[in-house]
Image 1 (cartoon, rainbow, N blue to C red):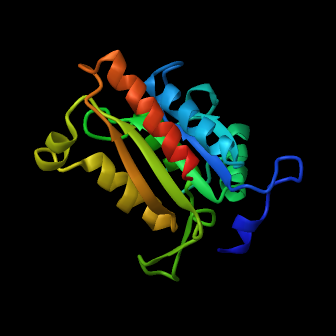
Image 2 (cartoon, helix red, strand yellow; image 1 turned 180 degrees about the vertical axis):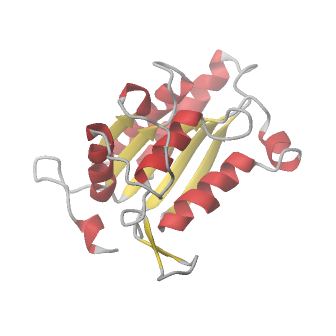
Length: 206
């Protein structure tokens, strides 16, 4: 684990694992919020420290206007998000799959903060990248309206591949568990309560 991961937790917070939860939905309330709270409850029950970033409440431009050609100053909420990612040793992303991919707000969040010098760096003039966020792990809590088998075998699970392989792994973050909660639309209250219990169990094993 690199030195960046070792910094951050205060004595008042305790000595459990430092967990940062990122709620990647713009909605004010949803099943994702409930799953996140259940996961946090399970993790805190084991003495871990859990902080949250709710992207829907943050103020930032989700559009990377000029790519990496020009510097785009980070808003205070994004600077704070970078500090929290450095603080964390385990990340939890909770989000829905929309149109087979990540919500635009979550994708824009990644575009803005996972920058060269923070999440990765280029080797000289080549396209080879060195990861800068190594030592961190991630759990993904993902809601879908499709059944998981249909999303994987008929659509190719593009959101999962984008998140685990094309985003987190490129920064050095190892995905530990990818948990699907689906299909949401026809689910019963009994099924949703079972999902919340599962999320709490996942948190207790963080």
